[in-house]
Amino acid sequence: MSNVLEIRGLTKHYPVGGAFARSLLHAADDVSLSIAPGETVGLVGESGSGKSTVGRCILRLEEPTSGEILLNGESVVAATSSRLRVMRANMQMVFQDPYDSLNPRIKVGELVAEPLWLSGIMSRKEADRKVAEVFDLVHLPTDTPLRYAHQLSGGQQQRVGIARALATNPDLVVLDEPTSALDVSVQAQIINLLEEIRQRLSPAYLFISHDLSVVSNLSDRVAVMYLGQIVEVGPTDTIFELPGHPYTRGLISAAPVEHPAQQKERLTLLGEPTSPVDPKPGCRLASRCPFVEPKCREGELPLQEITPGHSVRCRRYVEEHVDGVWDPEPTR
Ligand code: ADP
Ligand code: MG
Image 1 (tube, rainbow, N blue to C red):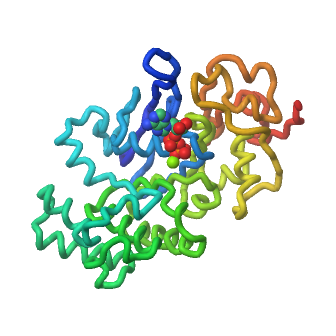
Image 2 (image 1 turned 30 degrees about the horizontal axis):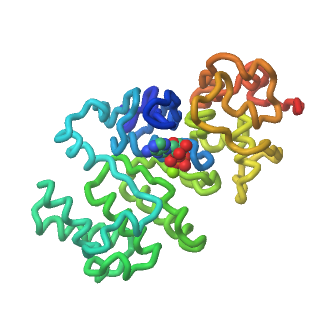
Image 3 (image 1 turned 45 degrees about the vertical axis):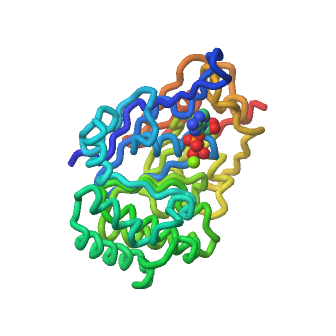
């Protein structure tokens, strides 16, 4: 079966530094990623690594600088605005801050129903029935549709956000840090709800989070981003068992909850993320990597496949690993 989502060479650059400056902020650089029907892919990386940019480009809430995005084989990038409206029913987004994403002046039931009948997907009556169905699906009390967002708790607001995303039966849901604004106890409930929905409706999820431990239980595969690039992608167990890229190793070391397959190595990255403005050639982690060598700062560095489905963007790892194992001495 063909992929629900296919991203090829997605690049998003923002001009920065005023009208005459030629500097470019590389929010996303040559990002390629695919998601199969019903699959969950976690997209992780520190704040500012470009995760939301990728999510927003997928739904074309942002125009990519270059690259291709295919939804069920059809170009999102080339779609006309009327075609895009139709395609958007098939890809939905859940945002980090549920309250900000809900109109405070409209009852939450109407908020979910309106796009359905306004777009002509359903009649008004069918839309109301759909609202009752999806609110039930996310376990909200039956009177919730008549309430306003401010009358709901953060967790309930996010359930409304999820209900709204599911109302059009999308093949793909982009979840952009859906639990990051919620209390810890509520976070687990939302994760459980997303898992339950996956089992009942099997949408594909792109689950974006700065926190590897949040995505690890839900994700079939994990893609790790750093300064606009995917530096590693692979099956979740492989990422925890045999992480290749020093950045991934650093993330795993910092993750508060351990994955069953997690290896015990501890790796601390040096310093802070560098600027995504006009990045230098070579590895973007070079200034923070304990294993850096002069060759790491040279030339373009592709994401290279190590085993089927597991790719790493680290020259030393690619050259020096033996059956996925690479245990270098720190160079500084
Ligand atoms: P993440 O979601 O991983 O935290 P983002 O995709 O939000 O990262 O941002 C990636 C980079 O792009 C950051 O350096 C951010 O400051 C920058 N960025 C995002 N949106 C814009 C914009 N509209 N204009 C300029 N820079 C932006
Ligand atoms: Mg973000």
